[in-house]
Structures are given as structure tokens and as C-alpha cells.
Length: 584
Ligand code: ADP
Ligand code: MG
Ligand code: MG
Image 1: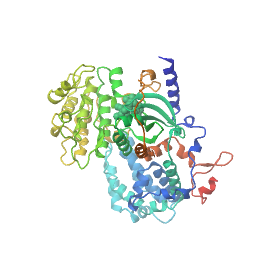
Image 2: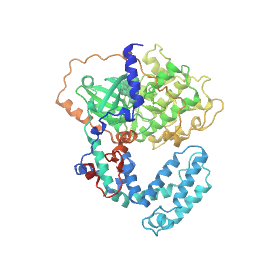
Image 3: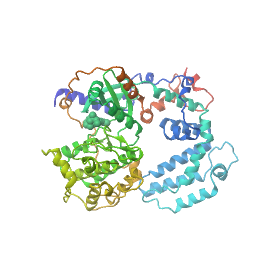
Image 4: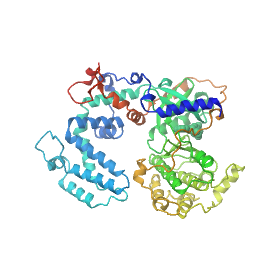
């Protein structure tokens, strides 16, 4: 290995190991995150209807949720108990399949329903009055308690047990409590965070590390936010290259779709900004390499079925999320599925994704040869089904160790591959179990109308349910060691991956082996370009940025105040002191 590569890797691995902790942060990190006086933030009050405020602030924004819960905890034990109840129910619904811990959780929730808030301010209120008088009936509580007692809790958690009290409690918090929160200093603090979130982002926000890969319009490298220490991948789209290939709409499309999507199974966009020469997308860093690399360099001959089932399930969840957002992905193949530090996978590269409007099928021969569905190859109109075909190709390839319609490195014309896609029946070796074969057969049906995932008349975006219900995901098989997928837990990202990448390894080509770009000639940037860059350059994306602040403990540290001796004097408690005065 060349010395240059060793140095680049060492620096990168070191940054990765420190990522998110104190040592990853710049020494002056607090300078990047200074709150303005709250009166300067009042213009950031959300422009949504009153009835949507709770959903917008508490349910969609991680920092909003924490501040609302802190407010409740500090000021009103009833509100606090309501928050605890909701959190516990959410935890129950994604809890471990181990029946005992789930049973314990259910009992804790029942206990909560049977207890009155500690140190109840109104004193006289008893349990019945607390839960029932304002927003719940005694009947709801007793039905819920008796169902919880008799339920087994052994298989999937039952989402219906606490559904009714959950709904009522949530509705209760959406009225007075959220209004009161918005009159409190916690809300001012929320607005201060929103102010920080809206600040412009530029190249000084990040430290850059080694190149990880090469894209069509520029390099992808690792980067780290100076303020928080969090690591990301930075995908550059060189302005001149984009212009030369008339790819403005395409690039903006990728950015806008990415920023709408918030799924643990699709790469997230955390920042979008520009430099003099490039448009930059800051994405979830996926350290573990792509599936193509794992399949052909590390596991030639295919993965075992447990591993295939795990990846297929996470990819199905990622696609389900995209489809429910009316997004068609169109580029499934092993190299677009990336692994993170733990071995979870995400769909990446949304360059070909499009939005489906009013369920109207679309046209366009795009994708990668050998992975495009027959209807695309035939240049017909198509819809979500092409992604399920892609999943079929992917599962086939992961099991067989080769793609269904093309040998690896086979010298074959595009026309021949496309003929096979249209006409040939793919062959199944003994590597496929019965369930795996029927799954692939169903997904690789030439006719989209008969394909697995496409048979929900009227609700084409809900096809994932059909795939999730297939025996491959829901039956045990002693021969392959396959177990049913615990879907709820999987959706919460709590299933341990079957394979964990080596934390000391760099799953990318050597820096010198990644081809350099040539310079773009004959392109000049002008005023119309600047207008387009303005649409691209939108800075932080709310949810990922707020999660970053929480995860890296910037949030916790900045909500705490110290005296000269380093003792905590005030931790956002309602002691009557206005925090703005306190800061100065
Ligand atoms: P393009 O759309 O131009 O093809 P990609 O999004 O596919 O660009 O990125 C190019 C390469 O950069 C990928 O093949 C991969 O090696 C690397 N890469 C892209 N995104 C990430 C990421 N989030 N984490 C780590 N590496 C990435
Ligand atoms: Mg790509
Ligand atoms: Mg792309």
C-alpha cells in the first residue's frame, strides 16, 4: 500500500473513532453554537395551524420533543405522566421479542395507568380523576388493563392493546399543554435552536478527510462537522460538470427528494451548501462498503440465507418508505446498497429517483443494464413495480453470487441482456431454499400486473406489505437457520445485523486507485446558474441536524449552565430565572 494511502486512512480512522465524542469537536465548538437573544428568533415561529403544532414541534422535531418533555417534567406532573405513558407505549411497540421484557414493559405501562402523578399539584385528585376526568373514561382504562393482562406478549408486540389510551393522551397533550409550552422559556429555547439551524452553511463548517468514491459529477469524501464532531459523507457535484451535462434539474431533484426522506434505511441528507466550484450534499456516512464489494470481494459464491433475508428486509423497508412518499427509486443494484459501522444497510444514490404524481405511470428508459425491469426495457409506462423487480434481482444475486441475467464480467451486448430480461426464465440452483425461490420468482415476474408487490389494486404504493408477508420473511427454516423477521423491531433498527464490518478497516478503494477527474473546459458560469445554486444551497436539514445536536451531546451541554467553579447552577429548571439574563 502506498504511503499516501496509509496516511489518508490513518487520519480518517482516527477521526471516525473520535466522531461525536468530545475529542471530535473543535476546541472552540461553542463559538459555532451561540444562541442569540430569544427576541431575535421570534420570526422563526412555525407557520402551521394550531392543531398541527404538536405534530410539527413534538413529533417531527427531535429537539422540539426533548424540550417539550423537559417542560412537562419540570412544570406539571400530570403532563409529565402523559409523556411517560406515550414514550413507554412507543417503546413497547418496538420492544424485544423476548416475551419477558415485553411483559415487564406492559406491566409498567399498566402501573402508570393505575397510578396518580407523584407530588400531584392539585393534591386531592385521585387516580380515577386524573386519567378519567379530563380525557379518558374508566372503561377505556379497565379494558386496556384487562387486555394487557391476558395478552401473551410473546410474538410480535400487539399494537392494539394501548392504542385507545395512547390516542386520547396524545390528543390531550395537543391542546392546553402544547399551548402552555409555547408560552414558556422552553419554547424560546426551541426557537433559539431553530435560529442556529437556519444559519448559512459553508466549507468552514466541515473538516475534510479522504476520498471514499467517485461519482458522476465529483468525488465523495468523508467529512466531520467542526461544531459537533459528527462524521458524514460529502458528495460533490462540480458546478461546471453539472452545467456541461445539463444536469441542473437532475441534481436539484436528487437534493429535494433526499431532504424529504427520513428513513433509517435510506441515506439521509443533513446539509446542502455550495462552494465556489461545487454543490455539496452532506449524507449519512456509510463506512462499511457497498454490497457489491462484500458480495464479490469478500463472499464470492453468495451470502447465506440469514444474511440475505436481513438485507432484503431492510431494503424492503427503505423502498416502502420511498413508495409511501410517492418516490420511485429506479436504481437498485448491489453497489447502491451501503453498509454502516454496525452492518445495517441503506439505499443510496437517489440520482434516478422520481416522484409519481396521482398514481400516473411514467416513462423513461433509465436504470442499469441487467437490473432494469422488462417494462422499462420495452419502453412502456411503468410504476412502483420496477423497484420490486429490482429487489428480485438483488435477492437473486445475493444468494447465487451472480446476477440473474448477466454473468459477472461477461462480455455481452446490451441487446442480448435485454432480450434475456424480456424472454428468458432465470435459473435457480440448489443454493435457493423453497421460500427464496418462490420469492424471487414472484418478484421477477415479467408481467408487472402479476408481480409480487404490484397486486394491490388502487393502492400501488402499498405493495411492500405483500412482500413483507412472504414466507421467506416469516417462516423458520432449520436447513438455512432462517427465522421469522421481527418487523416492528426491524423498523426500529433494533435487529442486530448478521455481519459487522471491521471498525479498523476502510472499505473503499485506495486513494490513489480512485480515478482523478479531468478539468471541464469550455463552460462559463453566469447569473442563471447563480439562481439555481440558490435553490440548492439551503443549509441544514431539520431532523438530521437536530439529531446530530442531540447525539453528539451538544444539545445537553448547551442547556446546562455552570458557575465559575464548574458546578451546574441551572439545568433549564423553572426557577424563575430568565435564561437570557443568566447567560449574559
Ligand atoms: P453518483 O450519483 O454520481 O454515481 P454516488 O452517490 O453513487 O454518486 O456516489 C459515488 C460513490 O461514492 C459510491 O459508489 C460510493 O463509493 C461513495 N459513496 C457515496 N455515498 C456514500 C456514503 N453515504 N458513504 C460512504 N460512501 C459513499
Ligand atoms: Mg452511483
Ligand atoms: Mg447518481
